[in-house]
Length: 272
Image (tube, rainbow, N blue to C red):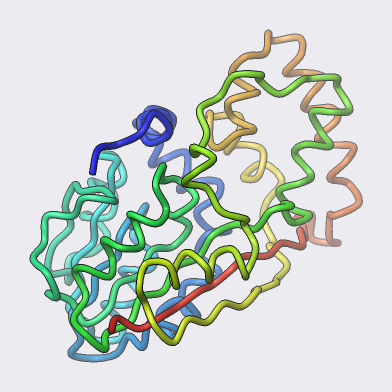
């Protein structure tokens, strides 16, 4: 299973950005972690794979439940950060979907938190998670939905206010490998991978964050807003920041934090 142009693009975008992610969007991605582990049935004594561990949040919670955890990520800076934070993990290493260096059926469960968003062949990635989990074991994954929820949509409004156009040529998942980023679409991928007892739910919450933390992600090249930010000259960055301050004002609580409504899709299934 070869990597695609989208896989290569995604890895180049995340190269060396573990610290920037940790300061900005890691807390956002952490919210569904407990529900993700619940959906995979993770508990004490289980051997669990966390694929795309990022800064190690999900893996850390699985360790706290008494699971034996193996955590992998495609980005070396993420692996280094997660390894420093997961002293009780069985292993933290460099590896990426859809090719994992593990034997068939070696885990009781596998989870992937906001990882399927970043792979060029989602069906192959889900299939690989199923390969490394034993029969009757469970898999659980989260993705961001489309259309995007309010918190993520806000960035588009910021750029539109300044007249910044999105890039016209950016690698994307090939049409024949893509799927609707809806509950039915995600459930359909798990079903097509041959998994059983497929479930999908939408999780909604309000993400509370410091305005500087929310700004710092794109300002340091994180995600699609970061790609846009990198392409702008200094004077446009100043205008983007002014629009950001204006448009986020409505979301500021009395304590100065932003309260941003958002959502994620959580799907789980059993390995036959």
